[in-house]
Image (tube, rainbow over all chains, first blue to last red; front, side, top):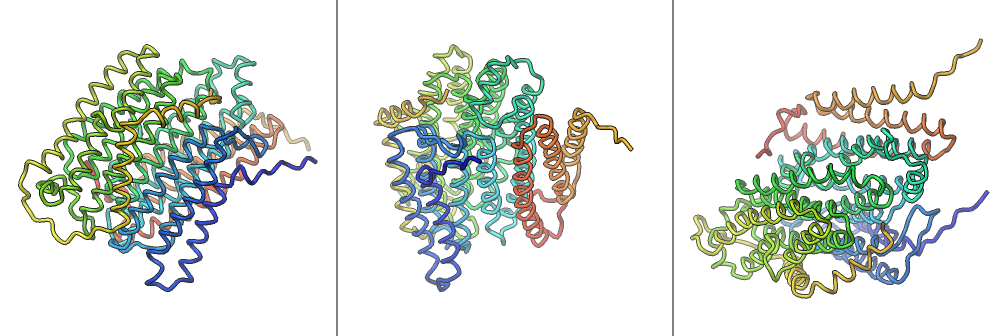
Length: 483
Length: 104
Protein backbone atom coordinates (compact mmCIF):
# COMPACT_ATOMS: atom_id res chain seq x y z
CA UNK A 1 0.00 0.00 0.00
CA UNK A 2 1.27 3.41 -0.86
CA UNK A 3 1.30 5.98 1.87
CA UNK A 4 -0.08 9.25 0.54
CA UNK A 5 2.22 12.23 0.63
CA UNK A 6 1.29 14.71 3.29
CA UNK A 7 2.66 18.20 2.95
CA UNK A 8 1.29 20.19 5.85
CA UNK A 9 3.19 23.33 4.87
CA UNK A 10 1.09 23.45 1.72
CA UNK A 11 -2.11 23.84 3.73
CA UNK A 12 -0.57 25.91 6.52
CA UNK A 13 -2.91 28.92 5.98
CA UNK A 14 -5.94 26.66 6.17
CA UNK A 15 -4.65 24.92 9.31
CA UNK A 16 -3.98 28.25 10.99
CA UNK A 17 -7.44 29.58 10.19
CA UNK A 18 -9.04 26.40 11.53
CA UNK A 19 -6.90 26.41 14.68
CA UNK A 20 -7.78 30.01 15.42
CA UNK A 21 -11.45 29.23 14.84
CA UNK A 22 -11.33 26.53 17.51
CA UNK A 23 -9.26 28.79 19.77
CA UNK A 24 -11.96 31.45 19.59
CA UNK A 25 -14.63 28.88 20.41
CA UNK A 26 -12.64 27.65 23.43
CA UNK A 27 -11.80 31.08 24.76
CA UNK A 28 -15.44 32.03 24.46
CA UNK A 29 -16.18 29.45 27.14
CA UNK A 30 -13.29 30.21 29.46
CA UNK A 31 -13.05 33.99 29.38
CA UNK A 32 -15.38 35.94 31.69
CA UNK A 33 -18.38 37.34 29.94
CA UNK A 34 -17.56 41.05 29.92
CA UNK A 35 -13.96 40.69 28.87
CA UNK A 36 -14.31 38.25 26.03
CA UNK A 37 -16.30 40.34 23.60
CA UNK A 38 -13.58 42.58 22.23
CA UNK A 39 -10.78 40.07 22.62
CA UNK A 40 -12.31 37.37 20.45
CA UNK A 41 -12.41 39.70 17.48
CA UNK A 42 -8.79 40.67 18.03
CA UNK A 43 -7.73 37.01 18.27
CA UNK A 44 -9.51 36.31 14.97
CA UNK A 45 -7.68 39.26 13.42
CA UNK A 46 -4.36 37.85 14.64
CA UNK A 47 -5.25 34.47 13.15
CA UNK A 48 -6.04 36.03 9.79
CA UNK A 49 -2.79 38.00 9.77
CA UNK A 50 -0.75 34.89 10.64
CA UNK A 51 -2.47 32.92 7.88
CA UNK A 52 -1.72 35.79 5.52
CA UNK A 53 1.97 35.70 6.44
CA UNK A 54 2.04 31.98 5.66
CA UNK A 55 0.26 32.52 2.34
CA UNK A 56 2.67 35.11 0.96
CA UNK A 57 5.89 32.98 0.81
CA UNK A 58 4.03 30.30 -1.12
CA UNK A 59 3.79 32.73 -4.05
CA UNK A 60 7.29 31.74 -5.16
CA UNK A 61 6.47 28.32 -6.58
CA UNK A 62 3.55 26.25 -7.77
CA UNK A 63 3.09 23.17 -5.65
CA UNK A 64 0.50 20.47 -5.73
CA UNK A 65 -0.09 17.98 -2.97
CA UNK A 66 -2.37 15.35 -1.44
CA UNK A 67 -2.44 13.18 -4.58
CA UNK A 68 -3.17 16.19 -6.72
CA UNK A 69 -6.30 17.12 -4.76
CA UNK A 70 -4.95 20.44 -3.60
CA UNK A 71 -2.83 22.98 -5.41
CA UNK A 72 -1.15 26.16 -4.32
CA UNK A 73 -0.68 28.04 -7.59
CA UNK A 74 -0.87 31.73 -8.22
CA UNK A 75 -4.60 31.56 -8.87
CA UNK A 76 -5.36 29.91 -5.55
CA UNK A 77 -3.03 32.25 -3.67
CA UNK A 78 -4.49 35.40 -5.23
CA UNK A 79 -7.95 34.28 -4.15
CA UNK A 80 -6.68 33.30 -0.70
CA UNK A 81 -5.25 36.79 -0.27
CA UNK A 82 -8.57 38.27 -1.36
CA UNK A 83 -10.51 36.08 1.08
CA UNK A 84 -8.16 36.90 3.95
CA UNK A 85 -8.49 40.63 3.24
CA UNK A 86 -12.28 40.23 3.15
CA UNK A 87 -12.28 38.26 6.41
CA UNK A 88 -9.99 40.81 8.06
CA UNK A 89 -12.22 43.74 7.11
CA UNK A 90 -15.36 41.81 8.09
CA UNK A 91 -14.01 41.04 11.54
CA UNK A 92 -12.95 44.68 11.94
CA UNK A 93 -16.41 46.00 11.18
CA UNK A 94 -17.97 43.25 13.30
CA UNK A 95 -16.28 44.17 16.57
CA UNK A 96 -18.36 47.29 17.16
CA UNK A 97 -21.43 46.07 15.29
CA UNK A 98 -21.87 42.78 17.19
CA UNK A 99 -21.69 44.55 20.53
CA UNK A 100 -24.25 47.11 19.46
CA UNK A 101 -26.66 44.47 18.18
CA UNK A 102 -26.01 42.08 21.08
CA UNK A 103 -24.66 39.21 18.97
CA UNK A 104 -21.05 39.26 20.21
CA UNK A 105 -20.85 35.50 20.65
CA UNK A 106 -17.68 33.50 20.18
CA UNK A 107 -19.38 31.43 17.48
CA UNK A 108 -19.76 34.53 15.38
CA UNK A 109 -16.02 34.99 14.85
CA UNK A 110 -15.34 31.26 14.71
CA UNK A 111 -17.92 30.85 11.94
CA UNK A 112 -16.39 33.72 9.96
CA UNK A 113 -13.05 31.91 10.19
CA UNK A 114 -14.58 28.58 9.18
CA UNK A 115 -16.36 30.20 6.24
CA UNK A 116 -13.02 31.69 5.18
CA UNK A 117 -11.51 28.21 5.40
CA UNK A 118 -14.20 26.89 3.07
CA UNK A 119 -13.55 29.70 0.58
CA UNK A 120 -9.81 28.98 0.59
CA UNK A 121 -10.45 25.30 -0.09
CA UNK A 122 -12.75 26.21 -2.97
CA UNK A 123 -10.03 28.26 -4.62
CA UNK A 124 -7.25 25.73 -4.02
CA UNK A 125 -9.08 22.46 -4.65
CA UNK A 126 -8.33 20.63 -7.88
CA UNK A 127 -10.53 17.70 -6.98
CA UNK A 128 -14.31 17.90 -6.98
CA UNK A 129 -14.58 16.48 -3.43
CA UNK A 130 -12.40 19.28 -2.04
CA UNK A 131 -14.31 21.93 -3.97
CA UNK A 132 -17.64 20.51 -2.78
CA UNK A 133 -16.52 20.27 0.84
CA UNK A 134 -15.13 23.80 0.73
CA UNK A 135 -18.39 25.10 -0.70
CA UNK A 136 -20.40 23.37 2.02
CA UNK A 137 -18.08 24.47 4.84
CA UNK A 138 -18.57 28.01 3.66
CA UNK A 139 -22.31 27.75 3.05
CA UNK A 140 -23.25 26.06 6.32
CA UNK A 141 -21.27 28.64 8.31
CA UNK A 142 -23.03 31.43 6.46
CA UNK A 143 -26.50 29.93 6.97
CA UNK A 144 -25.88 30.25 10.71
CA UNK A 145 -24.31 33.70 10.46
CA UNK A 146 -27.25 35.05 8.46
CA UNK A 147 -29.59 34.13 11.33
CA UNK A 148 -27.31 35.33 14.10
CA UNK A 149 -29.75 38.02 15.29
CA UNK A 150 -32.17 35.53 16.80
CA UNK A 151 -34.51 38.20 18.16
CA UNK A 152 -34.89 39.93 14.81
CA UNK A 153 -37.61 38.40 12.67
CA UNK A 154 -36.00 39.52 9.44
CA UNK A 155 -32.65 37.95 10.26
CA UNK A 156 -34.28 34.61 11.04
CA UNK A 157 -36.26 34.78 7.83
CA UNK A 158 -33.09 35.52 5.88
CA UNK A 159 -31.44 32.45 7.39
CA UNK A 160 -34.41 30.26 6.43
CA UNK A 161 -34.50 31.49 2.87
CA UNK A 162 -30.77 31.22 2.39
CA UNK A 163 -30.71 27.77 3.91
CA UNK A 164 -33.53 26.29 1.83
CA UNK A 165 -32.36 27.74 -1.47
CA UNK A 166 -28.70 27.04 -0.74
CA UNK A 167 -29.39 23.39 0.07
CA UNK A 168 -31.56 23.13 -3.04
CA UNK A 169 -28.69 24.46 -5.17
CA UNK A 170 -26.31 22.01 -3.50
CA UNK A 171 -28.46 19.17 -4.79
CA UNK A 172 -28.03 20.42 -8.37
CA UNK A 173 -24.31 20.93 -7.97
CA UNK A 174 -23.94 17.38 -6.65
CA UNK A 175 -25.91 15.89 -9.48
CA UNK A 176 -23.67 17.76 -11.90
CA UNK A 177 -20.60 16.33 -10.21
CA UNK A 178 -22.10 12.83 -10.28
CA UNK A 179 -22.75 13.08 -14.02
CA UNK A 180 -19.20 14.27 -14.71
CA UNK A 181 -17.96 11.31 -12.70
CA UNK A 182 -20.18 8.98 -14.69
CA UNK A 183 -18.92 10.27 -18.03
CA UNK A 184 -15.22 10.51 -17.20
CA UNK A 185 -14.66 8.27 -14.17
CA UNK A 186 -12.65 10.83 -12.24
CA UNK A 187 -12.97 13.72 -9.84
CA UNK A 188 -9.58 15.20 -10.69
CA UNK A 189 -10.06 18.30 -12.82
CA UNK A 190 -7.00 17.61 -14.99
CA UNK A 191 -8.00 13.97 -15.55
CA UNK A 192 -11.50 15.02 -16.53
CA UNK A 193 -10.13 17.48 -19.11
CA UNK A 194 -7.68 14.98 -20.61
CA UNK A 195 -10.28 12.19 -20.68
CA UNK A 196 -12.74 14.43 -22.54
CA UNK A 197 -10.01 15.45 -24.99
CA UNK A 198 -8.83 11.90 -25.74
CA UNK A 199 -12.23 10.21 -25.96
CA UNK A 200 -13.84 13.12 -27.77
CA UNK A 201 -16.91 13.28 -25.55
CA UNK A 202 -18.08 16.63 -26.87
CA UNK A 203 -21.62 15.48 -27.59
CA UNK A 204 -21.99 13.29 -24.53
CA UNK A 205 -25.49 14.02 -23.15
CA UNK A 206 -24.29 13.20 -19.64
CA UNK A 207 -21.64 15.89 -19.77
CA UNK A 208 -23.98 18.44 -21.32
CA UNK A 209 -26.48 17.81 -18.52
CA UNK A 210 -23.74 18.14 -15.93
CA UNK A 211 -22.76 21.46 -17.47
CA UNK A 212 -26.31 22.72 -16.92
CA UNK A 213 -26.43 21.44 -13.35
CA UNK A 214 -23.05 22.93 -12.47
CA UNK A 215 -24.15 26.26 -13.90
CA UNK A 216 -27.23 26.16 -11.67
CA UNK A 217 -25.26 25.14 -8.59
CA UNK A 218 -22.59 27.82 -8.94
CA UNK A 219 -25.10 30.33 -10.27
CA UNK A 220 -26.84 30.31 -6.88
CA UNK A 221 -23.60 31.07 -5.05
CA UNK A 222 -22.61 33.96 -7.29
CA UNK A 223 -26.22 35.24 -7.38
CA UNK A 224 -26.70 35.33 -11.14
CA UNK A 225 -30.12 35.73 -12.72
CA UNK A 226 -32.33 33.56 -12.70
CA UNK A 227 -30.86 32.09 -9.51
CA UNK A 228 -30.71 35.40 -7.67
CA UNK A 229 -34.10 35.36 -5.91
CA UNK A 230 -32.63 34.80 -2.45
CA UNK A 231 -30.06 37.59 -2.73
CA UNK A 232 -32.08 40.74 -1.90
CA UNK A 233 -34.02 39.10 0.93
CA UNK A 234 -30.99 37.53 2.55
CA UNK A 235 -28.79 40.59 2.16
CA UNK A 236 -31.47 42.79 3.68
CA UNK A 237 -32.26 40.51 6.61
CA UNK A 238 -28.81 39.32 7.59
CA UNK A 239 -26.64 41.32 10.01
CA UNK A 240 -24.97 44.10 7.99
CA UNK A 241 -21.44 42.87 8.63
CA UNK A 242 -22.43 39.43 7.35
CA UNK A 243 -24.10 41.00 4.33
CA UNK A 244 -20.77 42.61 3.47
CA UNK A 245 -19.05 39.25 3.94
CA UNK A 246 -21.57 37.45 1.73
CA UNK A 247 -21.61 40.04 -1.04
CA UNK A 248 -17.83 39.96 -1.37
CA UNK A 249 -16.52 36.68 0.05
CA UNK A 250 -19.16 34.20 -1.03
CA UNK A 251 -19.35 35.76 -4.48
CA UNK A 252 -15.57 35.66 -4.90
CA UNK A 253 -15.44 32.06 -3.70
CA UNK A 254 -18.23 31.08 -6.07
CA UNK A 255 -16.35 32.63 -8.97
CA UNK A 256 -13.07 31.01 -7.94
CA UNK A 257 -14.63 27.53 -8.03
CA UNK A 258 -16.67 28.26 -11.16
CA UNK A 259 -13.61 29.42 -13.12
CA UNK A 260 -11.43 26.60 -11.82
CA UNK A 261 -13.95 23.89 -12.73
CA UNK A 262 -14.99 25.30 -16.10
CA UNK A 263 -11.55 26.40 -17.29
CA UNK A 264 -9.50 23.45 -16.02
CA UNK A 265 -11.94 20.57 -16.35
CA UNK A 266 -14.35 21.53 -19.12
CA UNK A 267 -12.42 23.77 -21.55
CA UNK A 268 -13.61 21.58 -24.42
CA UNK A 269 -17.16 22.77 -23.82
CA UNK A 270 -16.34 26.45 -24.13
CA UNK A 271 -18.70 27.05 -27.11
CA UNK A 272 -21.54 25.44 -25.14
CA UNK A 273 -21.14 27.33 -21.92
CA UNK A 274 -20.32 30.57 -23.65
CA UNK A 275 -23.81 30.65 -25.15
CA UNK A 276 -25.50 29.83 -21.80
CA UNK A 277 -23.40 32.32 -19.88
CA UNK A 278 -23.93 35.08 -22.45
CA UNK A 279 -27.67 35.06 -21.74
CA UNK A 280 -27.22 34.71 -17.97
CA UNK A 281 -24.69 37.53 -17.99
CA UNK A 282 -26.89 40.03 -19.83
CA UNK A 283 -29.93 39.11 -17.72
CA UNK A 284 -27.92 39.46 -14.50
CA UNK A 285 -26.56 42.91 -15.35
CA UNK A 286 -29.85 44.27 -16.60
CA UNK A 287 -32.15 42.96 -13.89
CA UNK A 288 -29.76 43.92 -11.10
CA UNK A 289 -29.45 47.50 -12.30
CA UNK A 290 -33.07 48.10 -13.21
CA UNK A 291 -34.54 46.76 -9.99
CA UNK A 292 -31.93 48.57 -7.89
CA UNK A 293 -33.32 51.90 -9.13
CA UNK A 294 -36.61 51.49 -7.28
CA UNK A 295 -35.23 50.35 -3.93
CA UNK A 296 -35.81 52.31 -0.73
CA UNK A 297 -33.63 50.30 1.65
CA UNK A 298 -29.89 50.84 1.26
CA UNK A 299 -28.99 47.22 2.05
CA UNK A 300 -31.47 46.01 -0.53
CA UNK A 301 -30.17 48.48 -3.09
CA UNK A 302 -26.63 47.25 -2.51
CA UNK A 303 -27.91 43.68 -2.86
CA UNK A 304 -29.29 44.39 -6.33
CA UNK A 305 -26.12 46.28 -7.16
CA UNK A 306 -24.13 43.18 -6.16
CA UNK A 307 -26.25 41.13 -8.58
CA UNK A 308 -25.35 43.63 -11.29
CA UNK A 309 -21.67 43.34 -10.39
CA UNK A 310 -21.85 39.56 -10.73
CA UNK A 311 -23.12 40.29 -14.26
CA UNK A 312 -20.13 42.51 -15.06
CA UNK A 313 -17.77 39.81 -13.82
CA UNK A 314 -19.56 37.25 -15.99
CA UNK A 315 -18.77 39.46 -19.01
CA UNK A 316 -15.10 38.64 -18.46
CA UNK A 317 -15.98 35.01 -17.83
CA UNK A 318 -17.69 34.81 -21.21
CA UNK A 319 -14.77 36.56 -22.89
CA UNK A 320 -12.60 33.81 -21.44
CA UNK A 321 -9.21 35.21 -22.46
CA UNK A 322 -6.25 35.91 -20.19
CA UNK A 323 -7.12 39.57 -19.85
CA UNK A 324 -10.64 38.62 -18.78
CA UNK A 325 -9.55 36.11 -16.18
CA UNK A 326 -7.02 38.45 -14.63
CA UNK A 327 -9.69 41.14 -14.86
CA UNK A 328 -12.00 38.95 -12.77
CA UNK A 329 -9.36 38.59 -10.07
CA UNK A 330 -8.77 42.35 -10.12
CA UNK A 331 -12.51 43.04 -10.08
CA UNK A 332 -13.19 40.80 -7.09
CA UNK A 333 -10.40 42.42 -5.09
CA UNK A 334 -11.56 45.96 -5.95
CA UNK A 335 -15.17 44.99 -5.27
CA UNK A 336 -14.17 43.65 -1.85
CA UNK A 337 -12.80 47.06 -0.86
CA UNK A 338 -15.60 49.21 -2.21
CA UNK A 339 -18.47 47.01 -1.12
CA UNK A 340 -17.23 46.33 2.41
CA UNK A 341 -16.53 50.06 2.62
CA UNK A 342 -20.10 50.92 1.66
CA UNK A 343 -21.48 48.49 4.22
CA UNK A 344 -19.12 49.95 6.84
CA UNK A 345 -20.75 53.33 6.28
CA UNK A 346 -24.16 51.67 6.62
CA UNK A 347 -23.01 50.14 9.93
CA UNK A 348 -21.55 53.39 11.23
CA UNK A 349 -24.73 55.33 10.44
CA UNK A 350 -26.96 52.63 11.87
CA UNK A 351 -28.23 52.18 15.39
CA UNK A 352 -29.32 49.18 17.42
CA UNK A 353 -32.09 47.22 15.75
CA UNK A 354 -31.00 48.04 12.18
CA UNK A 355 -32.20 51.63 12.26
CA UNK A 356 -31.33 54.22 9.61
CA UNK A 357 -31.12 51.76 6.73
CA UNK A 358 -33.57 53.59 4.48
CA UNK A 359 -32.03 55.57 1.65
CA UNK A 360 -34.08 58.60 2.75
CA UNK A 361 -32.28 58.50 6.10
CA UNK A 362 -29.13 59.53 4.28
CA UNK A 363 -30.52 62.97 3.48
CA UNK A 364 -28.31 65.72 4.79
CA UNK A 365 -25.57 63.63 6.34
CA UNK A 366 -23.09 65.36 4.04
CA UNK A 367 -23.17 68.34 6.41
CA UNK A 368 -23.40 66.48 9.69
CA UNK A 369 -20.82 63.77 9.03
CA UNK A 370 -18.72 65.10 6.14
CA UNK A 371 -16.05 62.40 6.31
CA UNK A 372 -18.55 59.55 6.36
CA UNK A 373 -20.44 61.05 3.44
CA UNK A 374 -17.22 61.62 1.53
CA UNK A 375 -16.12 58.02 1.91
CA UNK A 376 -19.60 56.75 0.99
CA UNK A 377 -19.40 58.91 -2.12
CA UNK A 378 -16.02 57.37 -3.00
CA UNK A 379 -17.42 53.85 -2.68
CA UNK A 380 -20.58 54.56 -4.64
CA UNK A 381 -18.71 56.34 -7.44
CA UNK A 382 -16.25 53.46 -7.54
CA UNK A 383 -19.13 50.98 -7.92
CA UNK A 384 -20.58 53.17 -10.64
CA UNK A 385 -17.24 53.03 -12.43
CA UNK A 386 -16.03 56.61 -12.28
CA UNK A 387 -12.28 57.18 -12.65
CA UNK A 388 -9.88 57.32 -10.85
CA UNK A 389 -11.35 54.73 -8.50
CA UNK A 390 -10.85 50.97 -8.27
CA UNK A 391 -14.22 50.13 -9.75
CA UNK A 392 -13.44 52.02 -12.95
CA UNK A 393 -10.22 50.12 -13.64
CA UNK A 394 -11.96 46.82 -12.85
CA UNK A 395 -14.77 47.55 -15.32
CA UNK A 396 -12.26 48.79 -17.87
CA UNK A 397 -10.35 45.48 -17.82
CA UNK A 398 -13.52 43.41 -17.88
CA UNK A 399 -15.08 45.23 -20.84
CA UNK A 400 -11.85 45.44 -22.81
CA UNK A 401 -11.51 41.67 -22.41
CA UNK A 402 -14.94 41.30 -24.01
CA UNK A 403 -13.90 43.57 -26.88
CA UNK A 404 -10.67 41.63 -27.33
CA UNK A 405 -12.62 38.37 -27.72
CA UNK A 406 -14.97 40.09 -30.18
CA UNK A 407 -18.03 40.08 -27.90
CA UNK A 408 -18.89 43.61 -28.95
CA UNK A 409 -22.55 43.45 -27.98
CA UNK A 410 -21.67 42.20 -24.54
CA UNK A 411 -19.28 45.11 -24.00
CA UNK A 412 -21.87 47.60 -25.27
CA UNK A 413 -24.60 46.19 -23.04
CA UNK A 414 -22.20 46.23 -20.11
CA UNK A 415 -21.33 49.88 -20.62
CA UNK A 416 -25.00 50.82 -21.04
CA UNK A 417 -25.83 48.99 -17.81
CA UNK A 418 -23.01 50.76 -16.10
CA UNK A 419 -24.51 54.06 -17.22
CA UNK A 420 -27.89 53.06 -15.76
CA UNK A 421 -26.24 52.20 -12.46
CA UNK A 422 -24.81 55.71 -12.16
CA UNK A 423 -28.37 56.93 -11.56
CA UNK A 424 -29.05 55.03 -8.38
CA UNK A 425 -25.55 55.41 -6.99
CA UNK A 426 -25.61 59.17 -7.54
CA UNK A 427 -29.10 59.41 -6.06
CA UNK A 428 -27.67 58.54 -2.65
CA UNK A 429 -24.86 61.04 -3.10
CA UNK A 430 -27.30 63.76 -4.12
CA UNK A 431 -29.45 63.00 -1.08
CA UNK A 432 -26.44 63.22 1.18
CA UNK A 433 -25.25 66.59 -0.07
CA UNK A 434 -28.20 68.48 -1.51
CA UNK A 435 -31.14 67.60 0.73
CA UNK A 436 -32.03 68.72 4.20
CA UNK A 437 -32.51 65.83 6.60
CA UNK A 438 -36.14 65.21 7.49
CA UNK A 439 -35.32 63.67 10.82
CA UNK A 440 -32.23 64.05 12.91
CA UNK A 441 -29.79 61.21 13.17
CA UNK A 442 -28.40 61.44 16.67
CA UNK A 443 -26.56 59.32 19.17
CA UNK A 444 -24.30 57.53 16.75
CA UNK A 445 -21.40 55.65 18.29
CA UNK A 446 -18.38 55.21 16.09
CA UNK A 447 -16.56 52.03 17.04
CA UNK A 448 -12.81 52.57 16.53
CA UNK A 449 -12.36 49.24 14.71
CA UNK A 450 -15.04 50.16 12.16
CA UNK A 451 -13.36 53.52 11.58
CA UNK A 452 -10.08 51.71 10.91
CA UNK A 453 -11.90 49.44 8.43
CA UNK A 454 -13.35 52.51 6.74
CA UNK A 455 -9.92 54.09 6.36
CA UNK A 456 -8.46 50.84 4.99
CA UNK A 457 -11.25 50.42 2.44
CA UNK A 458 -10.93 54.03 1.26
CA UNK A 459 -7.19 53.52 0.81
CA UNK A 460 -7.79 50.22 -0.98
CA UNK A 461 -10.36 51.69 -3.36
CA UNK A 462 -8.16 54.66 -4.21
CA UNK A 463 -5.00 52.57 -4.52
CA UNK A 464 -6.56 50.13 -6.94
CA UNK A 465 -7.82 53.00 -9.05
CA UNK A 466 -4.68 55.13 -9.13
CA UNK A 467 -2.01 52.40 -9.16
CA UNK A 468 -3.82 49.46 -10.79
CA UNK A 469 -0.65 48.12 -12.44
CA UNK A 470 0.68 46.42 -9.31
CA UNK A 471 -2.41 44.39 -8.57
CA UNK A 472 -3.12 43.72 -12.23
CA UNK A 473 0.36 42.39 -12.95
CA UNK A 474 0.03 40.16 -9.88
CA UNK A 475 -3.31 38.92 -11.21
CA UNK A 476 -1.83 38.32 -14.65
CA UNK A 477 1.01 36.28 -13.19
CA UNK A 478 -1.48 34.40 -11.03
CA UNK A 479 -3.53 32.96 -13.82
CA UNK A 480 -0.56 31.38 -15.60
CA UNK A 481 -1.08 27.65 -15.83
CA UNK A 482 -4.80 27.81 -15.08
CA UNK A 483 -5.95 27.01 -18.59
CA UNK B 1 -32.29 -19.64 -6.65
CA UNK B 2 -30.76 -17.29 -9.16
CA UNK B 3 -31.37 -13.65 -8.50
CA UNK B 4 -31.59 -11.82 -11.80
CA UNK B 5 -29.18 -8.90 -11.84
CA UNK B 6 -30.60 -5.43 -12.33
CA UNK B 7 -28.81 -3.53 -15.09
CA UNK B 8 -27.06 -0.35 -13.84
CA UNK B 9 -29.06 1.87 -16.20
CA UNK B 10 -32.17 1.17 -14.17
CA UNK B 11 -30.49 2.43 -11.01
CA UNK B 12 -29.54 5.63 -12.82
CA UNK B 13 -33.15 6.01 -13.98
CA UNK B 14 -34.34 5.41 -10.42
CA UNK B 15 -32.05 8.09 -9.10
CA UNK B 16 -33.11 10.53 -11.83
CA UNK B 17 -36.76 9.91 -10.97
CA UNK B 18 -36.15 10.36 -7.25
CA UNK B 19 -34.20 13.56 -7.94
CA UNK B 20 -37.04 14.92 -10.06
CA UNK B 21 -39.60 14.07 -7.38
CA UNK B 22 -37.38 15.87 -4.89
CA UNK B 23 -37.13 18.98 -7.08
CA UNK B 24 -40.88 19.09 -7.71
CA UNK B 25 -41.58 18.56 -4.02
CA UNK B 26 -39.15 21.26 -2.94
CA UNK B 27 -40.79 23.72 -5.35
CA UNK B 28 -44.42 22.95 -4.51
CA UNK B 29 -44.50 22.11 -0.78
CA UNK B 30 -45.35 24.87 1.66
CA UNK B 31 -44.17 23.37 4.93
CA UNK B 32 -40.49 24.16 5.47
CA UNK B 33 -39.76 20.72 6.92
CA UNK B 34 -41.32 19.01 3.91
CA UNK B 35 -39.30 21.23 1.59
CA UNK B 36 -36.20 20.22 3.48
CA UNK B 37 -37.11 16.53 3.29
CA UNK B 38 -37.48 16.86 -0.48
CA UNK B 39 -34.02 18.44 -0.64
CA UNK B 40 -32.64 15.54 1.38
CA UNK B 41 -34.26 13.23 -1.13
CA UNK B 42 -32.43 15.03 -3.94
CA UNK B 43 -29.13 14.49 -2.13
CA UNK B 44 -29.85 10.82 -1.57
CA UNK B 45 -30.88 10.36 -5.19
CA UNK B 46 -27.44 11.71 -6.10
CA UNK B 47 -25.92 9.19 -3.70
CA UNK B 48 -27.60 6.37 -5.61
CA UNK B 49 -26.04 7.73 -8.79
CA UNK B 50 -22.61 7.89 -7.18
CA UNK B 51 -22.76 4.35 -5.88
CA UNK B 52 -24.13 2.88 -9.12
CA UNK B 53 -21.46 4.62 -11.17
CA UNK B 54 -18.79 3.61 -8.71
CA UNK B 55 -19.72 -0.04 -9.09
CA UNK B 56 -20.10 0.31 -12.85
CA UNK B 57 -16.70 2.00 -13.26
CA UNK B 58 -15.01 -0.31 -10.72
CA UNK B 59 -13.56 2.64 -8.79
CA UNK B 60 -14.07 3.52 -5.14
CA UNK B 61 -14.12 7.28 -5.62
CA UNK B 62 -17.87 7.43 -6.05
CA UNK B 63 -18.60 5.52 -2.86
CA UNK B 64 -16.23 7.83 -1.05
CA UNK B 65 -18.07 10.86 -2.36
CA UNK B 66 -21.37 9.35 -1.20
CA UNK B 67 -20.01 9.22 2.36
CA UNK B 68 -19.01 12.87 2.18
CA UNK B 69 -22.46 13.77 0.88
CA UNK B 70 -24.03 11.96 3.83
CA UNK B 71 -21.80 13.80 6.29
CA UNK B 72 -22.62 17.15 4.69
CA UNK B 73 -26.33 16.29 4.64
CA UNK B 74 -26.18 15.54 8.36
CA UNK B 75 -24.51 18.89 9.06
CA UNK B 76 -27.08 20.64 6.93
CA UNK B 77 -29.92 18.88 8.77
CA UNK B 78 -28.52 20.01 12.13
CA UNK B 79 -28.31 23.64 11.02
CA UNK B 80 -31.59 23.51 9.13
CA UNK B 81 -33.67 22.11 11.96
CA UNK B 82 -32.19 24.71 14.32
CA UNK B 83 -33.25 27.43 11.87
CA UNK B 84 -36.77 25.94 11.71
CA UNK B 85 -37.03 25.99 15.51
CA UNK B 86 -35.85 29.59 15.51
CA UNK B 87 -38.39 30.63 12.90
CA UNK B 88 -41.19 28.82 14.74
CA UNK B 89 -40.32 30.71 17.92
CA UNK B 90 -40.47 34.07 16.19
CA UNK B 91 -43.48 33.44 13.91
CA UNK B 92 -45.34 30.40 15.27
CA UNK B 93 -45.49 28.99 11.76
CA UNK B 94 -43.11 27.24 9.40
CA UNK B 95 -45.28 27.70 6.35
CA UNK B 96 -42.96 29.27 3.79
CA UNK B 97 -45.83 31.27 2.27
CA UNK B 98 -46.39 33.14 5.52
CA UNK B 99 -42.72 33.94 6.01
CA UNK B 100 -42.72 37.03 3.82
CA UNK B 101 -41.50 40.07 5.72
CA UNK B 102 -38.74 40.56 3.16
CA UNK B 103 -39.95 41.26 -0.33
CA UNK B 104 -39.33 43.72 -3.15
